[in-house]
Amino acid sequence: MSTDLLHRLASADLEIEGRLVDASNATLVATFDDDGSLLRCVYKPVAGERPLWDFPDGTLGRREVAAFLVSDATGWDVVPLTTWREDGPFGPGMAQLWVTTDDEQGLVDIVSPHEVPEGWCSVLDAFGRDGEPVVLVHADHPALRRMALFDIVVNNADRKGGHVLQGVDGQVRGVDHGVAFNVDEKLRTVLWGWAGEPIEPGELADLGTLLDCIDGDLGAELCELLSPAEVARTRRRVERLLSKAKYPLPGEGWPSIPWPAF
Image 1 (cartoon, one colour):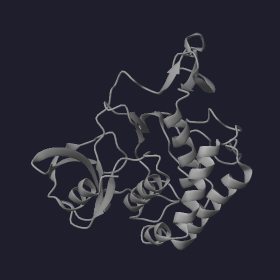
Image 2: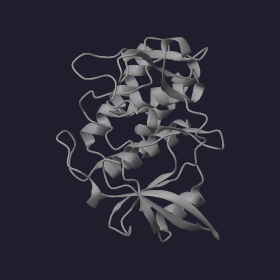
Image 3: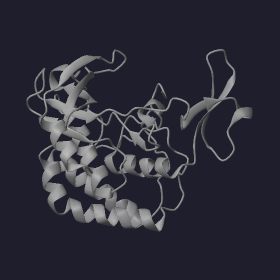
């Protein structure tokens, strides 16, 4: 993590450029000064959040910051630099460093059954708009594997294919973690390619480090962003992963894949 860049993201003046109109909540694109250079970020003010029946009002941005802290603690670098701002142009909200993507390097796709890329994971057989058979697939990529594990930890209820971004720098990151950390099991993701497989030793070591962090300073930071019950459930999910040492299978009683998938 770049501490200096995170500090500037948290404190520099934001100049609003526009809005992402397809987003469910107010998602604004802004620029800020980074030591003489202009960088772009996403700014989501609390005032632009739509109420949800299963998440407390005004908490979605804080959940995005909590997701970044968990990502940083594991060392997986799953989430772009994200911080909380009390003084945004439209009031309190979260700010997240923009990811400039390589549009030709998508890692999640919907393809014909005869066009599944070699080595990719097939997640779901379905039918397209015209009734043609299609398959939801994703790359067998180590960064996606870490992202899938991260989503289990934070109980991400909305890992769409469009929330997986491969930057021009080659890094793979996930965005839109506002509906995470619920005390109820709500995991919905397109990244089911490793379901039932053993968690690798290095990943288990990272989860052990995360558990120690939750018992230390990270836990205190998370309690400023989430409820104590949500932090406790997060810790319990990490313990369960360490105990079973396997990626879970899709559960019953809750849709396992978000809709739409992108």
